[in-house]
Image (spheres, rainbow, N blue to C red):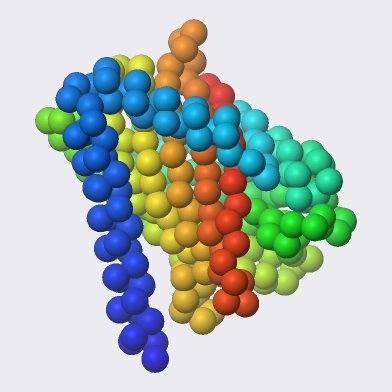
Length: 250
């Protein structure tokens, strides 16, 4: 049974790759140059954000500092407004490190603490962050390709995630994020990524997350605006969740 599950997981990852390649291929057919591509992509992104019935809005700050050569420290602070908790605001704090083994390969880890409200959910059965995921530990491997002549770059991340609440384990996932970004110019990089969540306990894909966003520079600072759509399978029922995010990086 586990062997069949492993084959199904490999097929699912391969479908994710094909989806991303097809996504950009369709855009390239519509747009014959970078600027036209960017106009179409951004119009699609913002139109989707404006018309999406988001269940969570995220406003974040990200600080990155090189401690020693090849070793990087990152701090993230987010304020989330979750409509699943009766329009409740709660902060999420994360601290992580990353070490460059080679030019395009790095190892890292992080610890995240969420002040998720300890109250009953609203009528929406699905929440983006479960109430039992207060502290999260991760270890990850990142592999990036060189940027091709057409200014496209592939990004891969394998992440082991361990979540706890009150000292007890609640979730254990193996997450594989695959993505593509397109460098329009020195200040603008639209991107899209897919990330299946493999539940290690029963060897099944439980969540699939889609990110569509745009990283850009303005006023000598970096910003990221994105739309996140996540499908979650629970008790053989598929639920979807939409979140909109804006991150300021310095």
